[in-house]
Length: 502
Image (cartoon, rainbow, N blue to C red):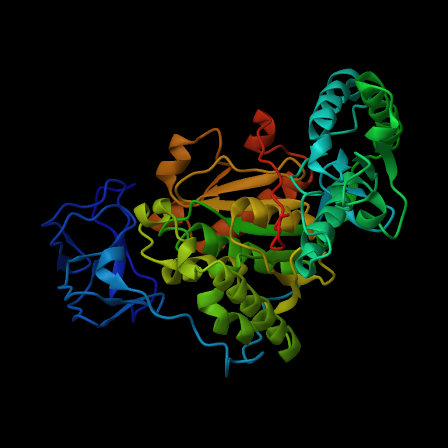
């Protein structure tokens, strides 16, 4: 990072800019034609001109707040000096009025994937053992360790074995209307292309979520622990069934597959003010490239798009898709209202330390990772993607819940941007980490896969970084391990369960 004072604006109409220097800038320093009245940390905003009390504060040419006090040019603009605007009204929104063309088709690009019988393609070849209830988790975890140590070395074409652990299945209102969300999430996770169609389930026996309710349309390979005689028999039965699955998975090999077979999920966590400047716009450019290649791409995070709902409905491919966006986001408004919170509860202390004053500013930086392609479909929580192109997966913004729901939606490759830093990843699909700042990428050199920081200094453009990301997606989908995969670190699945717990 250069020592020259550097401030970044996103639109000519903006009256604030963010400080890009690693250590921030001290009071008295001149930048962007003004003299700083305060010391301003990296990523935080300075007023480019005098803003009166109650005046609009604009970033991305969007009103991200109103001045809670007079802010002379050069002032530090942060959370406590702003009041947040209300959420946009859902009435009279633009409906499919700005459907753009992301560019000419990209043809002939392939990756090395695992073709499944149903036509889907995995980026990894994994044995997954699902369960109907959390009670069995200890047994399944022990069996997975035994399988990994004793069986997996005999099957070199299998990338790994994992337990699809969760805390659902009993002690819940299983017939409540919203219970459909965690149930279909578990069902569709088991059908993820990275598992090769090998559905193996462990049940306790007495739980509310019975196997035939979890998988009503087909019979799964089942071990019911209450039918076994003792712990050793339980482990032995799981391992015996696992061996048959491993033999079939081991017969699979990577073959050239068109990029149109990729299903890529995009997410951000530990976001900062650079998220909407470097990493997320580059993801948006790469998302457009994936769409041009015929792939399926999804972005998510209800509270992080709610303040830009007009942008989403305008980009919907048709009015019906626009209405689905409205329906999902208003449902989520009601869900938050039941908990007596609103979208403002999203923003974390780390977001604010990284320069994001409120959820409105955060939302503008989050949406840009969707690129410019039309939104072809909306995926309700727990459902699978059915439409190629850009999809909106209507998930909570929680990293863990969002990732779990994108996995259920069929994602086989996960791309995760971060400005503050997070070791988050999922075992079921490779998770590429993209840093918004070079300072983070240097410090976390063996956790961050891609540094988007050079976009901030002009060493790279959004286009060049987006093209680089596109190539990284292909390499990772073809088997190149991420840093998280090399270290063997991953997060647990986290189901979204808005239904009551009994």
